[in-house]
Length: 264
Image 1 (tube, one colour):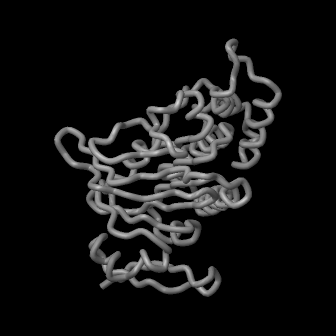
Image 2 (tube, rainbow, N blue to C red):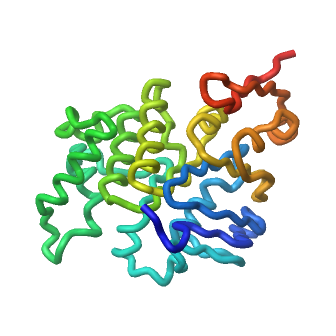
């Protein structure tokens, strides 16, 4: 899918909370069909940047534009059709079924009476199938494991049919099989449907494998942005994370880097 403007543009973004500066003059762009991985140590400002991008917070300085317009200039229902956010620890009532939880993603499309149409039910079914949860659609949310709940939250976001997807640690609580399955799905959605994806990841190897570009945040400052091979340099990672690492090109993945800690 082509667009005249980038799904997300952040320019000189600064944000402070309780007197502490969390982000300092951060600038980046997210293009249609791109997976941009947001990496960095704990407390670097990654989750805050995601919420600013979604319009949940207002910056102290700088600008955020979603498809060419600040979040405040979008009607809420229309913005929810364009952008979906999956935050960490999102709450879903434990008495809701998986099906009811995913169908919540269709809220921006419902009419005055709030009755789902067949198109809404079809979108929810597709999303459940994509994340491998269709067979658990009648299970209560309170009965699910942490990884299963995470997959339901992703399905709810996909049911919105957004053009921009913002994900905060979508692989939390997942085993390696489901980590790879979910990130492969996200990459496929970007490639086949032109969805722009900004995803926070802690696992540098997963980030190197699935992201087109990486943005490295350290203490609220963007210190590197670009191809994983350029961003994930051993000397940079050692300085940022405080632990010596070895970085190897993977012959099975186009030379993308693999990162291993050095142990004394």
